[in-house]
Length: 305
Image (tube, rainbow, N blue to C red; front, side, top):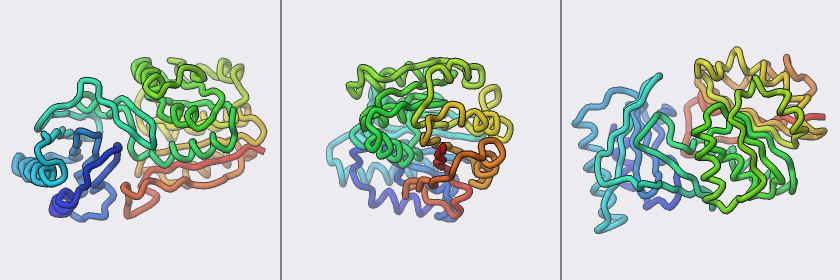
């Protein structure tokens, strides 16, 4: 884990949420199990394989030493998450976590939770996707957006801050949408957003009546039984896009699994919605560098005629 320790030794004091070490990308041989994220004022270390007490002690010592250099006299706060394919456990290792933990990204504020669950309320690897949405909304003031699998609605916050006219957020998880509503209030967004706690696949009639949309964002889970299984459900989703999109409207489709590459999305769109034209693949954040672009997060845009 020397590459991780070397990174910690030169860490800056972070002001925004972001990833600082991405062993999962395979660019640091021997460190594939480790990631380190900043959710100021807390560090989050994640291991995707069993970690020993000695390894955690080494990381804790390195963080403590570096923190005294960049923030002398301030307490070190860090959390450890042990994670596998199906579950995660979270443990406070030092310091504390704010009771209401709010972090920033590009001037937006988001509520996060590091001590429960597998996910934390803000997907850091989607930062460039949110910036793409900001650019899109800034170039089309008043645009109408449909945010599918909205989770805590970070795309919605980005779109409305940049000038979108309205965003409809839909997700089966009412609790996540409730956090999304709080995220809007944290950013002073008192209007323009709707929150629908529904199954996307059972709501096409409602969504059609609310359309057409100038932008559709779809960021589904890749493999979540009872919600979305990419090989089976992405075709069902894509074939509905043409009837929901306004002329010239765009669809931003996201896929986060190393098991399926970008060609999967190209083939699905060609088979199910061939009238859509491919526009671009959004670059993923530099901090999430990977030995293979096809293993990494895929965020890709298509446009209606």
